[in-house]
Image 1 (spheres, rainbow, N blue to C red):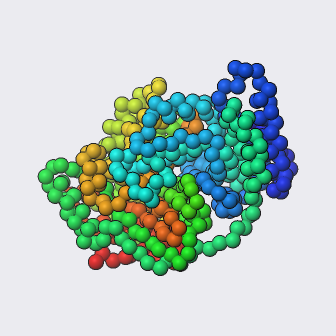
Image 2 (cartoon, one colour):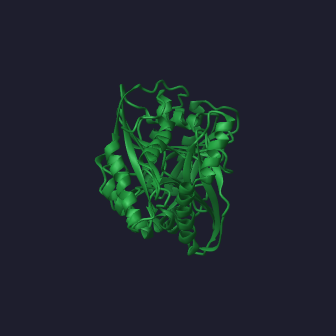
Image 3 (spheres, rainbow, N blue to C red):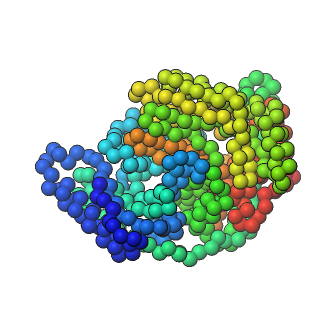
Amino acid sequence: MRGLEPGLEPGPERIRWTLAEGVDRTLSDAAAEPVGLADERVVRVEARVGRMDPFAWLQAQKTPPKLFWSGRDRDERAFQAAALGIADIVEGDGAPDTAALRKRFALISDDPRTRYYGGLRFDPRSEPDEDWAAFGGYRFVLPRFEMLVEDGISKLVCNLVLPWDIERTDGILDEIEDLSFDKDPAGALPEPLSRTDTPDWPGWKNNIERALAAFEEGRLGKVVLARRADLEFDGELDPALLAQSLKAATPDCFHFYVEPEEGTAFVGASPERLFRREGREVRTEAVAGTRPRGDSAMDDDELRDQLLGSAKDLSEHAYVRDSIRESLGNLCESLEVEERLSEMKLARGRHLVSGVRGTLREGVTDWDVLEALHPTPAVGGHPREKALAEIRTSEPFDRGWYAGPIGWISADAAEFAVGIRSGLVGGRTLRLFSGAGIVAGSMPEDEWAEIEQKIGDFTRIFGVEPGHTAS
């Protein structure tokens, strides 16, 4: 790893020169290594940038793939990463080949700062729509360039994969020369023209009634059903600008934006962690049950008390908590599950939450944890396979990466959020996805309204209040 250049607020030419000089020297040194010493590995070259908005930087770059990730603001060690290009990629259709992934990710074992970013489809067994084709069944990228933001200071990283990048030296130097550092790219969000819901109200009511019948027959305990709201605009959406606006409107969430090809991007603000691993320590959380925030302190307290006292919401949460306990129990040598419920308070909503901490057994990998936890009953249902079968039958659209795991992996840590409160950008269309946990006692009107409240994180950005009526 090459060190950061001294000085304050270096200009674009200085940044490019520092990065190019470090890359050229690193690759020249690698080319001179004796045969047999140049084993496959990642080397990071860094240049100090000063203060730079990661979204503005991404907007200014010419071509995808692009990516943004940030941890929850209230979490320790949260950071922001804006990424561009591909140094290495692991992708495929269908379910991930975990053995191949473990072997490939051995590449990052020497440097804990090296991260692959990516995600998975919610359901690899379902038939993908064309809208999701660019994302594949799973896709994890080691970016060519990362703009990392910590404590308000940015640094630019170029990831090199040796020995393969030795032959790509000229191309990488050209990519550095093409990097833009325009801090104020032009652009504004377009105006929404129309909205289409899938399913519509009759279809939604029918789906809820099907689920309630399954509960009565004892075939299901819980199922999470989703809706898709398609918004059409008077111009094309800039996904980086949308992600930036969403981040500003939704503090205390994980924020992500993945643009594998130009004009197609998955954007979201998720309140829910799937898991975080540091060494062998793992943390996750059971999140279920929803209420909005109140307009006054008195209203807010009343809504909180309603949530904490709701038999329906307590039942929904219990499925999630008990499932996580069962799923992680076999992977951990010790596991602590909070029995006392608390509320996760967001800017415009709240959820029931209970934390889970454990110590993984020796040899347990991130892929083992992903397979055990996803999908939790918070986004799928219980029992898992029967709930997934109900979702495949009921929902007239492909979830794609919605409600799937999205995050990053490094040698000594990993973090994944659940890809909820999210939308798929495609040209002038934004497809919003959101779901509601259905248990015995659920009412179609209430669940429709809950989804409206969740979709509101996006619609308010365009000046549209949630509340599309169920009719």
